[in-house]
Length: 55
Image 1 (cartoon, rainbow, N blue to C red):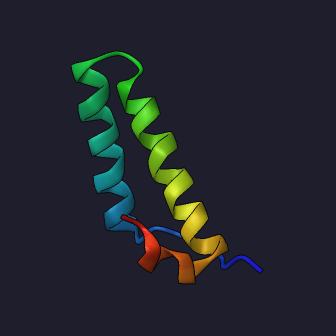
Image 2 (cartoon, helix red, strand yellow):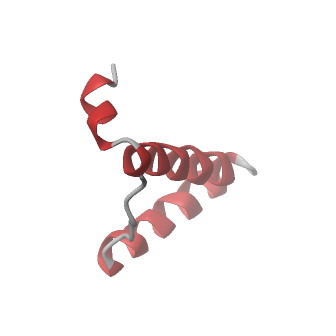
């Protein structure tokens, strides 16, 4: 069972700003950053108990 997840609007705005910051540094870097964060959030929502095992 996965949990629904949604960023708080202020967090979403900050996340978007971070993505643009990375993209300004190197084309494609912002996209890769976004994909990694979304994958991590999805994994945590899918199996919340696994989050404590990240190292």
